[in-house]
Amino acid sequence: MDTTNRPSNEEISQAVDTLNRLPRGYLPFDLFIAVSAKITQPSYELLAIRVNQGITEVLLTQRPKDDPFWPGEWHMTGTIIRASDAEGQDFPSCRERVLRDEMHGVVKPIDEIEYAGLRFGDSRRAKELNHMFYFVTDVSDDEIQEGKFWPVDALPERTITHHRIMIPRIVDMFLAAN
Image (cartoon, rainbow, N blue to C red; front, side):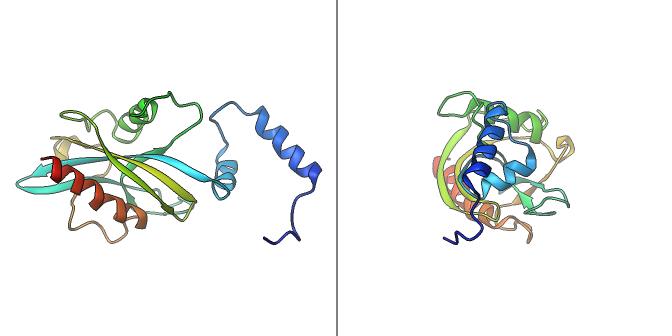
């Protein structure tokens, strides 16, 4: 580790003081980005799956063009797990946030949301521990407010790399259960 540009003890104390003044679970975006590069970032990934005329499809949404890590790339819906999230093995706060904010309350599970495992690995933003979940939906293309369903074997070329790893794993879990 290069220590030539290491912060002084006073600078570290100032940073700690600043962090301690923030509410639990909240980081301003620039600070979130800086901290993400230093820690393992836990995430909740939720894949909506539908079978359309015998073809398994997955819902992907597109990142904004000004996204600092994945500009304009397609991804499955998900969220960072926050220190302020409600406890529970099914991550109830995360689930509700994704269903509300990314699926706009329109893309809904027909049945239960299922656990599909963990992925621990690098992304462009940070080392991530992804908690993977999925559900089956019957939403039509006309009802979707954001994103698009893609055949699982024909994902867009600009799909986030680590999501290309997770999606087949999740779909395999779905297919094994059905």
